[in-house]
Every structure is written in C-alpha cells, then in structure tokens.
Length: 286
Image (cartoon, helix red, strand yellow):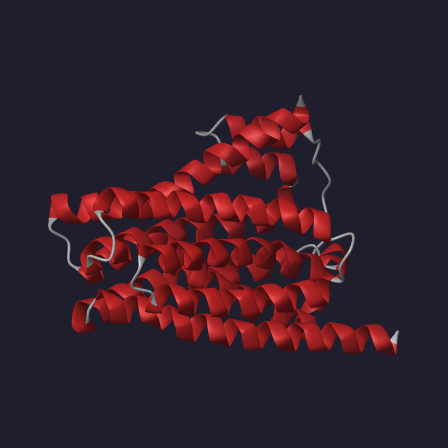
C-alpha cells in the first residue's frame, strides 16, 4: 500500500512537470508573450521549487520531517500522506562541515548544469519544434511524451545497472550520451533523426541526477543539511536557463536559444568527469 501511494505521487508530479513545456506554446499564443517573457514564465516554476527545496530542508532539521512536510504540502494532501507512510520523523542536528568537502562543490556544479539542460529542454522543446517548423504541432507534443517515456525507461535501466556497473563509469557514459544526443537533436532536420536524438537525450538524462546524488550519499548522511544547500544551489540553474534561452531566442531566434543548451551539456560533462575523477581518487586513498 505504501509503495502504491509513492508511485501515485510521483506519477502526478511527473504529469505536472511535463505540462509546463506542452502548455507554453498555447500560453504564448493566447497571451501574445514574446520569448523573453515566456522564458521568465518557465523560470518562475523553478523559483517555487528553489524556495521550497531550501526551506523544506532547513525546516526538516529544525522541526522534524513530518512537520515540514505538512507545512509545505497542506494544499496537496496526497504528498504528506505518502511521506507519513514511510515514517520520516527523525530530527537531525545541524552540521556545516560539508563546506570543507570538495565533493560538495563538485556535486553542486554537476547538478547545476544538468538542471540547466533539463529545464531548458523540457520548457522549450515543444515551442522549438513548433516555431522552427521542423515538426507539426501535434507531432511536437508527441516528442515531449517520447522524451518522458525514455526518461522512465532510463531510470528503470539505471536501477538494474546500478548493481552491475560502477556508478562512476555509468555516470561518465550518461554524461557523454547527453552531449552526443543533444547535438544530434539540435542539428537534425528529419523526423527520424529528431526522434532518435530525443530518445537518446531522454535516456541519458534519466540516470544522471540519481547517480550524482548517490555519489554524495555518504556525505549527505554525515551532514544532513548538505542536501538542502546542494539542491538549492543546483536549482538556480533550472531557474536561470529557461529565461536565458528566452532572451537569446528573442534577439537571435529560437534555434540559437536552444543551441545554447549545447554549451551547457558540454560544461556539465566536464563537471561530471571532474566528479568521477575525484571519486576514483578518493577510493584509491582509502
């Protein structure tokens, strides 16, 4: 029963996240928004995530997890029911020693640029296809669904591979896939290659976030407040990138706006390689 409730919560959460990119073209058309304002609109969604992620983590330390869950989810009853079902009520003392950990900063920058790419693509993908004329409106909407299907498939694969492949090697592979498939996506002009790019990009996205978080698992367990700072800092990327894409699109066109994500995924790959190198070195020193 508890597991079913958890599944239902995340299904609803995924539906809400997907709706942002799908609804943006209709909102732009109905309200006459330019690319800059549209980017700010997508960014505001992440502003809410940023605020709640920081204070929820801080309140969990001070008040306990159950009370903080109730505070932030009073209007969304199914989530506190789910979290109460797993019995999270432990209070944890604050410890700021993680600021001295290099791993803390490597995890932040890796997640920061990943979330830049994720939110940028999720928020602008349908609009990009529609406004460039690469795909028709109905087909553009389908591309968003295909992306999320591949994310789901990728996350299931991640669970399976986590017991068979070292997470450092898996993370490097997914980071490389993110770069390769996004470049394929942005340079493709045929439906078949676009679909291939979206499928590969979605599949590669799936394993990066949870694997990076698992790399910081011991540090988060040692310093519970570290996760609040990591999530808050990294979430700034998901706020900034949609607005940046919108601004670039307003001045240079939507293609240029989406192309800026290519720079982000390359930087993220570099950050991932630095994280993997640090983890491997730390293991050798133990």
